[in-house]
Length: 247
Image (tube, rainbow, N blue to C red; front, side):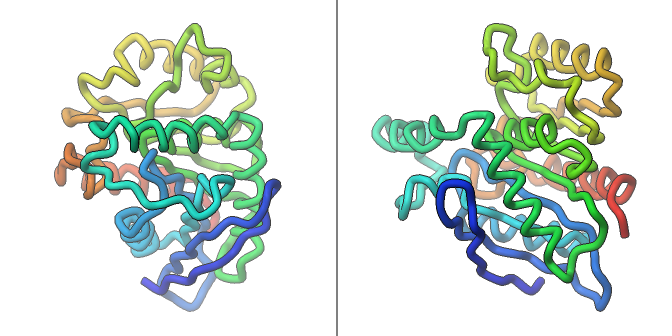
């Protein structure tokens, strides 16, 4: 898929990003992809290429842009190396809900202004930390987001966390798809039940599934990558976006 490097004007500076353009001579739906805690890197760009191959103009942006020229992480050792985990935490802690929503608004505006993009609303998807960001964006952008997916996202419905996205379910107008992982301490059966209840109470169209795979199953450079589960999630995303986004 054609891939373009771009710079996006943001609330707190300028963000590097890539636009992954679907083949064809007509505008296609736009999707914003939130990377996992490892941030933007070639693996995520290849995933954005894949989504573009399904027919969606995909924007993959540097969620850590406030950190300047941060050194890339090695996802294979990120969570076992205390120093690297601390460095990642220092970048991630800057991502308050208000900042996530403001950043998502800027990325959505940029994406919708592209001549390759059809419609007035976009989809979002995210992985791990990005899955949580995808849902938070949906709580803040209203009808700008028609569909939002969280793939092995964590901390989606934590009762004692005032920033938990499930607490703002009544502000979501998007269709929601959540793919959780088995035995995931960041998204337990109790969290899944709380999220399901919150979305149902708010009348949000949604689907929540638990995949028989580990946290990180969809991202190829993750040690827990599962090819079968990854293929299943691509099919689910295609179904979600085909049903909700303008073509």
